[in-house]
Amino acid sequence: MLPFLTMKSIPHILASAPVIEAKKQKLIQQCQQLKAKNIIPSLKVILVGENPASIIYTRNKKKFCEAIGAECEIIKLPKALSEKDFLSEVKKIADNKLVHGCFVQLPLPAQLSHIDVGQLIPPDKDVDGFHAQNLYELMKGASTKSFLPPCTPKGIMTLLKFYEIPIAGKNIVIVGRSMIVGKPLMLLLTQRDATVTLCHSKTKNLSEITKKADIVVTAIGRANFFGKEYFSPGQIVIDVGINKDKNDKLCGDVDFEKVAPIVSHITPVPGGVGPLTILTLVRNLLQVAQKI
Image (cartoon, rainbow, N blue to C red; front, side, top):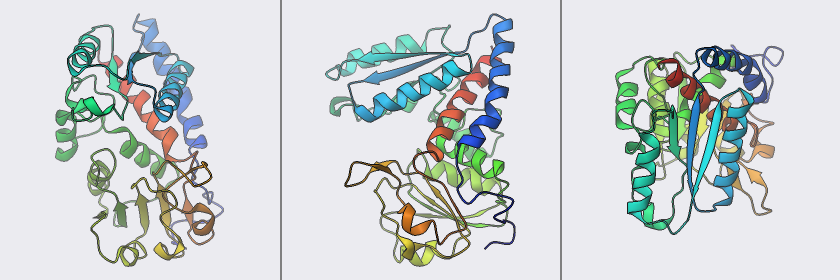
């Protein structure tokens, strides 16, 4: 086991629930302070089509927003929507001065999938953190209080901080190079003085690389792909994957039952990184509203 962690000081399972509970009251207070100034934090979620997973995700985001006192409206648009009508709807919502934050729920239908939705939302309303300007601030190493960071990577950083897991000087391997998780997370960890290796589908001898890390982050979207042969005793595993196994059960990229007994600490799926993505989304929303 790594010397900076003990089973007594930190639970074996790195669950999000204690993190959410610790942060929620502060968010409620911030929302109340804004309302006292006649500012009601308003989030608009643009949902195109009837993707079952997207419906669940947007519903969870709306539920958490309303739990802390913010407003959240899900704008449902038909699956067969034309590109022209889609762009018009997004612009109308983004230009609304009463809307503090908005985003497009992915994935989009085939006829819209080529659109870079991150560039459709103004950077100061881009609560997802995907606009080029926000990503540039991230690359510069700016404080996340001065721009809107990508939600899942920032959520992972919040998790590590809450459980008092040191980052500086640690060897961290990220598997997955998407702009949603892998690449921005690499930047956040590097800014905290970690040595980061970014792996992907073309990486050779992947298990040899992951087994040498202090912390392994998996974000490839493949159910139970990582078995115990990818890990070593004492490691910390952050599983970002949200998948369905052959029995239609929700699972991560990591085979939890086989890997959990080996490693020091691990995030569960569900109940791990996912809720922290929503937490960051709401924190970004309040950050925007506070600047009004």
